[in-house]
Length: 232
Length: 144
Image 1 (cartoon, rainbow over the protein chains, first blue to last red):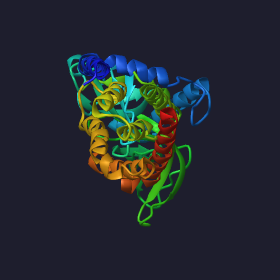
Image 2 (cartoon, rainbow over the protein chains, first blue to last red; image 1 turned 180 degrees about the vertical axis):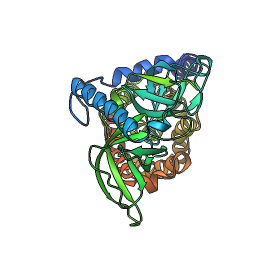
Image 3 (spheres, rainbow over the protein chains, first blue to last red; image 1 turned 30 degrees about the horizontal axis):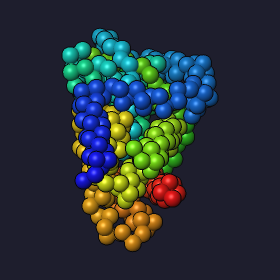
């Protein structure tokens, strides 16, 4: 073995040890490198193209959801207001298998699996895994996300089905769901009537048994940097 | 460090940049894995280990080691083990290994993707195939 080869092996071995140390003990530096590569821009909203307008639409959705609650389901309102915990998004699932956010609040902060995660008053996902100081949030854009919801002031039932383009499935045929109706949560473990988004359009399901509706979201999930987590 | 290793490191940085930038605008292509598979045809296992660990360091998304990241890290070494079967031409070997690896990766982590998001899977594989060939072309040029 030549001395050059020996020194190469030594150098590579040292690099492997250093990288292993960072992978195991200091993964946050890796997240920082990743965030360096990920542009943060408020101008790439898929809906409106502006943060101010996004805020207004989100607020409008909240108000619509409140109105829907008062009109249709006032008797079912919860009697207590859940406490929320603010958390920063420090990382995102970097592959296309899932759509998950990782936030800096964990089991020690009172976060539990199944808790609702809210952004600008809108439900964006649920906690699926917790560690001591971190948690993983499955967003509504994840293919495996499912949530019972109610639509509009009439409170039609449906099942929010996650994915790149989330939609509400299993809406009874003949329901007068219309564009602009608010979609709000109606699931156990999630605060009642949390707005999720607005109906964009409706169609008949492929099996012709139900109606389904596409949803418009007043935010860009890639721009979410801080969220509120409902305490159990 | 050889010129070829330096070029490979540059490619890895670029693939990280492209993958994360595209991901932030909703387009997912696993360019980093494609680059590592191409590297498996050109570097010995020790150099490959450095590249793979760097990729894991940047990609690891949670404070624990997940099965997805373990499979991700194992794929380039499997490609390394199979490269002798394609020693006659990496130009054909890399795309074959990329297709097989990506299919196995999807089946292992999220088999439902084939049913619910097939266009996204195909786009990922197609984009990675093109990128893998570009990496090969760059490494061949760097060798000269």
